[in-house]
Amino acid sequence: MINQVYRLVSPRQFEITYKDRSIVSGDVVVRPTHLSICAADQRYFTGTRGKEAMKKKLPMALIHEGVGEVVFDPKHELKIGTKVVMVPNNPVEEDPFIAENYLRSSQFRSSGYDGFMQDYVFLNRDRIVVLPDTIDMDVAAFTELVTITVHALSRFEKKAIKRRGTFGVWGDGNLGYITCLILKKLYPESKVIIFGKTDYKMNHFSFADQAIKIDEIPDDLQVDHAIECAGGIGSQYALDQIIDHIKPEGAVCLLGVSEHPIEVNTRMVLEKGLTLLGSSRSGAADFQRTVDIYEQYPDVVDYLSTLIGNVYDITSVQDAVNAFETDLSSSWGKTIMRWKI
Image (tube, rainbow, N blue to C red; front, side, top):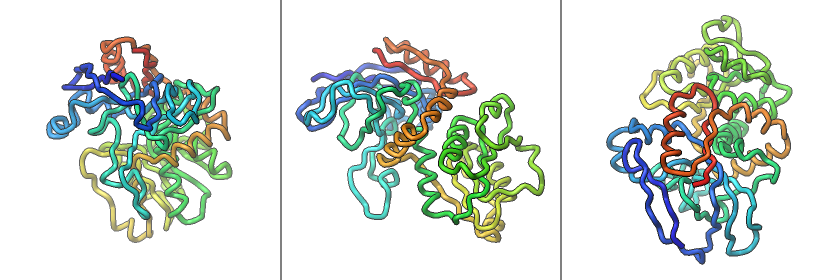
């Protein structure tokens, strides 16, 4: 069959390309229905990813956060119309010690490998996770972002000391919101504090036990563990505060991406015996655990709906451009594209 792929060929310019795909390949064919724009997609769209990266990775279909419906299963195990979340990470080898999302050989959609802006996506069976029939698909569209937190906390559970009294989350954006929410569900007896700088954003964190502005942190406040969700140069300031306020032998989960090197107070990291845990992306197991959380705690999906910002029906390439342009000026939430092209 001929599949239409909507590729970014230069900043702010998409072109339609055509690929001949065989339906006897063994792949499950999924029709994308809801896609979510990520900051990483925006760096490509605007051309701020860097000249060398742009030259190396374009042309490329964007979007690595998305859900859809099964249109063909060669094994007939999945019914036509089954709602699924698509896993963007595509490993090509296995390692007994290194997770699939850290293998340098793994392919990741919308990062040098075509993302979900296609008429149909052909996926290995282990790259899809079935969603509940009743789920809000606008929310499900950014499940990949939720898996980032779930993956980080899975690593935390394996490596951190067992004290779980107080968690501090630095960063009042989308990822900080998701992280506080998942922490309250996985550790209901623990205290979760959000540290942010923007009042109207912090007002959304109704489930957090406490909200503290980063310039009003009491000198004697301490947390057992911390999750850094600030990103950019803000990662440096967040880490400085975390190192000051975390108890000895605490774990610091690093989730914020910085394009440039930042300074870290290694003297106090050593003195306190801290564990710095870096996490990036996620694997199929994290997607399954996230969907399990959706089913176990239905109110999680309700809370996540607060993150829905702009919603666009996409029926043309220009509609997609408009969605990306509007997303650039959005200060809160996720831009969802209902993929009807």
